[in-house]
Structures are given as C-alpha cells and as structure tokens.
Amino acid sequence: RRSELSSPIVSTKCAFVMLSHLSHRGCRAATWQARIVRFSPAVSKPVASKPDSLAQSRRRSTTSTSSQEQKNAGFILDLGTKELIPEWKKMIAPSTFVTDVTAGVTVGCVAVPLSLAIAVASGVPPEVGLVSAAVAGVAGGLMGGTTLAITGPAAAISLLVCEAVQTHGLGTLPFITLACGGLQLAMGVVRGGGITKYVPESVIAGFTTGIGVMILAGQLPKALDLTLPAGLNTVEVVQAVGANIFKINPAAFALTIGVIGTMHVIPKIHPKIPSALVAVGGATATTKLLGLSATSIGALPSGLSAFTLSMPTLPPVESLPALGGTILLIYAMTSAETLLSCTALDRLRPTSYKHNPDQELIGQGVANMTAAAFAGMPVTAVIARSSLNIKLKAHSRLPSLVQSAFVFGSLALYSDVISAVPLSALAGVLISSGAGMLQPAELKTSLAEDKYNLGPYLVTTCGMLTMGMAEGIVLGCASSAAKHLVQQRLLAGGGDWVVQAAESRLKDPPPSPDTRKEA
Figure: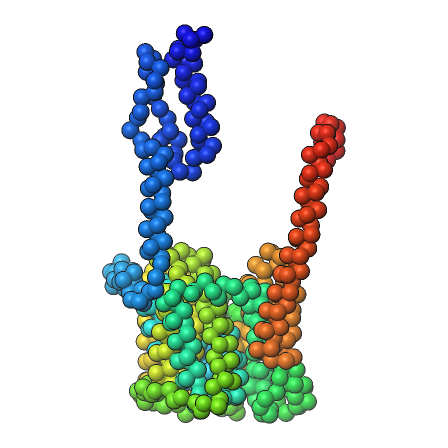
C-alpha cells in the first residue's frame, strides 16, 4: 500500500482532492491558475509554481480594497476639479468640436422657449428663466457629475417655485435659490449624494404626475386668454375655466392648439429639429402677420442689463422658519430630479466619466448659487434637453456651454423679438411638457419592483391636487413607509412559516418520481 500511495498518479489524485476542498473556501481570493501545482513523475512532493499564493492574493485584495476606501473617504474639498480637468480638455478636441457646437446650438434653440415658458409658469418675469438658463448652464456643465447633462429651469420644479413666490414674495427667490445651492454643495462635499436615493421612487413618480396635472390645469387660463383670481388649487382652476368658457379668446386657443400639434408632429418628421422653437416662432410670426389679438410676454430688459450681479437679501427673521420648510422642499425635489435624470442619461449612453452623484450635487449647487447671484431661480439637470443632447451625438461638456451662450445672446440681442411671443404659445409648450409627465418612467420601474407601490403613488398625486404639493409629498412618504412596515411584518411572519415548512419537509421522505412529475 505504501508503494501505491507513493506512486505519482495516486499522489496527484490526493493533491487535487485536497485542492478541491481548499478552492471551496478560497476561490474568491485567488484564481485557479494560482492553485495549480506541478508534480514530478519521479518525486511525489509537489513543486511550487510561480503564481502567487493564497495569502499573497488575499493581502493584495485587502490592499486594493483599503486603497479604494481611502480614495472614496473624506470630503471633496477641491470640489472634484482634479477629476474634471481631463473632462474639460476633451471640450477642445478637434475631432468632436464641430459636432459638439452643433449640438449646443440645437439644444439652445429648445432651451429659449422652454425657459420662457417655465419662468411664466413659475410666476416670475420671463427674463429670469433665460438668465438662469444662461449662467447656470455654464456652472452645471463644467462642475456637474454627468458629461452630457444640461442644466436649466425645469417644469417639474416650476410650481414649487410659483408657490414659494406667492407665499414669500418674489424678492426672496434669490435667497431661496442660494440656500438650495448651498445645501446641494455641502451635501456633495461630504459625499451625501446617495441620501436622496432614499426618497421612494413611487413618491417621485406621484410628484411628477401631480406636477403634470397641475401644469395642464394651470396653463388652461393662459391658453384661453382668461384672467382668473390667484391662489386657486387645481380643482378650482378647472371649475373657473368651465364657468368662463364662453369668454375665451379664439385666437389664443388656436395658437395653443397649433403649438401643441407642431411639437408632436415635428419630432416624428426629424427628431433633431428643435420643435419648441419652430412652434413658438411660427405662432409669433402668425400673430404678427395676421394681426391676432393675443396677449404677449411684454417688454424685456435689453442688452446686458438683465445680467446684473446682485446679492440676495436676507429675509426677516420671523419668516425664516416658514421659509426653511420651502427651502428644504425645493432642495429635496431639485436634488432628486437631478440625480434621477442623470442616472437615466448615464444608462442612455455611458461615457468615460461615470455618473457621480456627489459631483452632480456639487455642480448643481454651484449652478444654483451662480443663478442666485444674478437674481435667478432654482435649476436642475433637465432630462428633455439632456436627452436631445445625446441624440445629437454630443461627446463632451461643450454643448452645455454653447447652449448657455445661445440663450445669453438671444436675450441680449433679440429681446424685442422675444417680447412679442404670445403667452398662449408658451402655454402650448408647457401643456405638451405636462402631458409627457403624466406617465413618468419612475412609475413603470416602481411598479415592476412592487405592485403595491401604486398606493403611495396615488396618495402623493391625489394629495398634491387636493391639499397642496408639500402635503402630498409628506403623505406619500408616510404611506410608503407604512407600506414598507406592513410588508416587513408580513414577511417576518411568512418567514417563520417558511422555515417551519422547510423543517417539516426535511423530516418527510423524498418524493417519488411520479410525485416529482406531477409537481
């Protein structure tokens, strides 16, 4: 038997049996090539080969993990500029320069009418939307955590801004924008970009749908050229429009229908044509040529007078508690909207610079603080303009800067043309945007994960429409938390039952082949 055991074949078998047991415990730390050993036919002792040992492999894995943790640990005190320098150099690459400039001009053609419409829906002067898009687009494009994202005013935040302006006054808007930007910057520096991911996706979907419905209802008076009292909720607006249906302006209604139809037809003809610009430009030209009686935007600041630096004024101390709730709400929604949009963009077309939520908050914080310095409104990374940027084959951050320059030039050089745009045409743009928000992508994802997410979604939407935006969001978060607790309790009870059933099955004899076949 000793001679048999000392034979090379038996020794080889014993060695591989031993290695198979070792590999069960350490296969994650080393590869199979590092475990194969050579056997000499004359000597039964294994000869060590060159690959690293298991201990060395574990040591290397631990070292790489600790170095990665050290890299991700600590605050981003340099605002991420070290990692962004290669991104900035790509903007002047000769191979992509023309494509990026063309994409930026096209996105700018879309940004001008959308920024005007969002500003009007937010209850602020139209030039505030254009100024915010121009200055924040540069800061967000350079400092953001997503290469192809475009920063500017968003329709989903417009009603939050409108409510803030109605409650606290237009003079407090720059301070609100500055505070939101400061919170975003601070959260990005301390690597808190992942916190906003805890906002339930069903609540975000309900918020988006609620905003879409509120935009549709809020733009009906402008689309019909009606004057209604301020402070009405969605249901009251619809009732007031129905009561004054015979006082509508047919010309304004026709312009709104024409803009909506144009914005839906042009993308089917060619997706790269800026449908919003064509629709609003056509409505403005039609109004001038036919002499239609439709209310226009009105006079705007000309030249560089709209781009004036101004320090936000601190509101009275007694208003700070109520103002703090508004700031936190706008901060939470703008951050969630930004991170969701950028995550979707990264999935549409990944780039060499992977989406970084912490850097994205830093970029949006700098963008909002820059907008506040010019008396602007809160901005986010907007999915519509960013997805158009991707469709136009953009490669770098240059299109964000080009579209900002286009918006800047439009306001500085063509303010008299913009002042002639009918409000009903801008209402058509927002109605098209609001209709697209009625079925958000987050709803499909949320229901795919759990069909019971429909409850928080409906609670959020109905709460926003009947009680208010803040109340609807709070109720949605509470219902989502309650749903989660109930599911955990049911899962815990079901888990005990499953364990008991599994233990009882272990005591039973194995099923026969016929039983298996029936199962």
